[in-house]
Image (cartoon, rainbow, N blue to C red):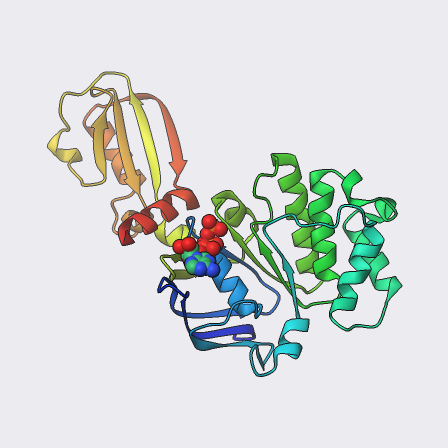
Length: 311
Ligand SMILES: Nc1ncnc2c1ncn2[C@@H]1O[C@H](COP(=O)(O)OP(=O)(O)OP(=O)(O)O)[C@@H](O)[C@H]1O
């Protein structure tokens, strides 16, 4: 199904001074998804978001937001987007209510107190509506940034590193907020270098490195395609060498022969070389084990491999 709410075509960005921050970026964001853009520092994440939001001009290429060209039809494109920036830049002495209402006005939208009320309630800020921002906790200030970005009823929300420097509890709270927004039909694009965040939240993941999109994939497909599993058997008696009957590339001895490590990705099963065959061979060779441990590679392992491969 292709129901792209954002279409990015052939985007290049070379900053004044000659640095190329984006290189031939093609990307489609589907309506209603949570898309995580993952990449190391300086990869081009903020530049890409800034171009889509119309804050930075591309050197080449085109961005369509819900069908509107973000240069030729800037207003229509921009009003569909909410942007939660990386930096906390709040007006310290304003109240929550005023700052969020003012943001709506910046988009030329008529006041709509009922909408502001529902945004503040959904972000658990209603009780704080008359508080000055300076009196709020860090987590509340972040939620105010989200409320500001939602004040003009955008259908797309960009979150640039929403949980950078945020503690674990607050991070979970933010994830919940983002999920609820998605459940209400908002398309979410978030940048992060917390792999855990992408693993937890995203429907699809894009990886950007050195200004190039190196991969876009459904999260589960990515993890099953590139992920591997590892089975470690703790042997009763150490082995000096592997018997030839056990000779297979996926198997190795470690811990001075006390551990047998089998690394597999599911394809071995199809070829008849999976775990059942391994266990049968072990029994036949009289090799016994006292314990076992399995481990699945995380998105982090996959990501590190990807970025290393292209370095
Ligand atoms: N205004 C600018 N002028 C020149 N170079 C810039 C400018 N803004 C960003 N860059 C360069 O472009 C590259 C990409 O920067 P960008 O902020 O998009 O990366 P990022 O992936 O968001 O990084 P981080 O994870 O650190 O926020 C970096 O090398 C950066 O130094």
